Image (tube, rainbow, N blue to C red; front, side):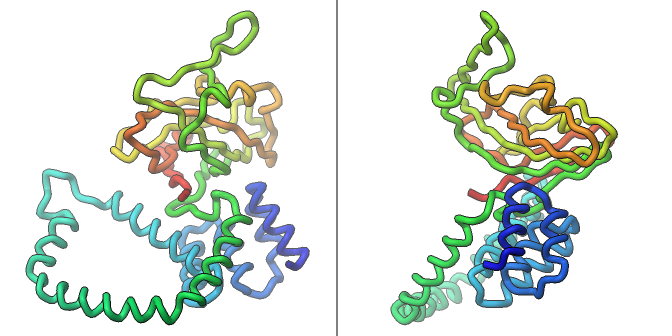
Length: 293
């Protein structure tokens, strides 16, 4: 791998999107360069254009780009879904009606596809195995940022926030969580409620104010799979890991970045769909989609 691409990959791991774009400014558009640029540009339209460009080729990045585009489409479809009481407008209802009318055609087509698929698998099994191995190697070198769909970051007057890492089911015994209460100058571990567990997200925040005293200068909440929202929490009120407690060192000046863990208590029967960012300078929360795992 070229030294420039190695530096760009490291910059992406560090959440430095500007650094990635700066390093790749004069690089030719190879699949890897397009992939890194797609995960670094601020414009949603440009990001989607670059991912679509990757899917037109046969590189090992093509299935990853298609995975992002598919999740983007699904995420947008959920946002556009009509209310339950207007069932006749919902795409799912209309699709069921179409399927009923086209039942015979689907049966015939399904049988034909099954026959063709069996022969296709036999012919291509060796090629697909090698191709999937290449894709797995790419996955191993990328952070969670590579598998986002929807909006990858929130940009507001106080700074820019992006997700660096997530833990969808925290083991509270191995990594204790606290609400900040103390006893004998030690943080008291918090036990999740019956039927609940802890979900943790590590964010990277870049400050654009003269000084950011309480990064990320916004309240954060989770949008869950049942469309309910967790209680918003900010720097001074959020749950956190005892080994990652807030400190004066978190205060940063303009242009500097800091990584912070936020922990949320959620029902085990749900999963996060997105991170909501309630910035004081914004009337509505910004939505940062949850990374694919």
